[in-house]
Image 1 (tube, rainbow, N blue to C red):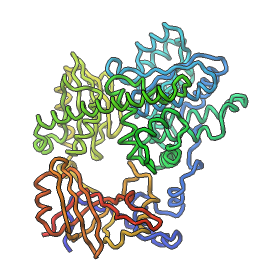
Image 2 (image 1 turned 45 degrees about the vertical axis):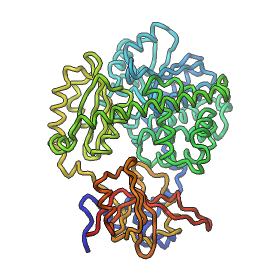
Image 3 (image 1 turned 60 degrees about the vertical axis):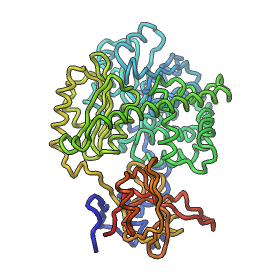
Image 4 (image 1 turned 120 degrees about the vertical axis):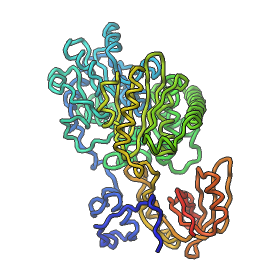
Length: 591
């Protein structure tokens, strides 16, 4: 039997216990899908199928949590004014809001400050702390989704013993071990981050809002009874819809605690208790029966992100704050403004992307450099991260883009699985004024004078570490299937794997020798629609981003091997039958 293309790689798991099938009454196909995701034992399957709050780890295991609780309780009891400082992306915005709303319920005098992306940039700075110190309004700053790597601020706060304390609820990779003894002993700069070197917290991949949620949980647990009475029993559960949005938006793996957060959060999202979020969902997802991670990633999060990309995040904060000043009319206006900002963001993003593709020979870059790095005075730094993501998806190489402004460069990078961006950039950290991120994404500020050396070094590193095979666009599939096996029972079983995302990808299948019954191609949209027959069963398939040469070959072909996911949302159960649609990721002509 002819092999599939080399770029179609089967997820091979050999030690599968198929006896589990009878214990659960599952098909061997589903047990294989579980095993491909590292879920092999009966206990692991049960935990995956029925994620429970019991699966969440004790927040008391987080480093710095005890010191953080003590400091916040002191602020609450002595009625100190608190400033919540956050990031301007969806994760940062939600982190700010859930902390703000929590403290407001305790009658704390609290404000939110989100820096301007264009004039201030990411993370807390010494200049900001000095300004707050001079204003003498706050004794405590709670940083959310930032603060781990602000080493200059840490040193300034701790060594000078200033009249402001800082708590950082963060999830970013630490550049180095931040003064743990000096910070925690003095209680001046407390870092709560599961990724700290000395952390024993069992799960490392919480979002920023996930860490903030854990901190809120721990504080609420330790409050006096008179304060606890201000919160209904379902209060913490009610926050999970927003924490789920942050987890998906920040592309955290949907395993472990994150699976619990996202599965439970999506269940309550449609009936969110947050008035502003509910108003936005009613407007943009009206009529949707089930809210999925795709809705969050492609519809909800981009709108919360948009204003921070084109101006500032003020409207997104206003929308989600529990503020009775905002009536339904004003909330509706905010949603309208977020929609307009999102349209503006998409236009700017498309313009930058088209310019880059038109001005560069990516075939040569892929072959000779294995990474794309560029800068421009014209590009808006607010869209550089998503443009970089678009380029990574299209060309499968790491991408770092900079906005040039005077003698400074501010940029964002995105990477592929085979190239740890954070680790490789860390070796060049002396070139940067600011730097942060993780394996697949980064943010950098550096002098323009360092650019050419930086670019040359990164090309050298990428070329030495990435082979042609590493940057070839490849696909991993779970199973080879016959169309006759894709039936109602199998569709029901696929539902059990949701929600899909990083760490729990949507299952991918291959089927060989599919007869093409009909085909249509839209050249403008680059969409191919075909009807396929295999084992006397017919399915409709759709493929996006199809270039003209491939489309013409398919249109003149009689049979194909297909690699696809199953769009089970098109499959109606309870005796209402419609044809399941295959979303084709790649295909091979049968010769």
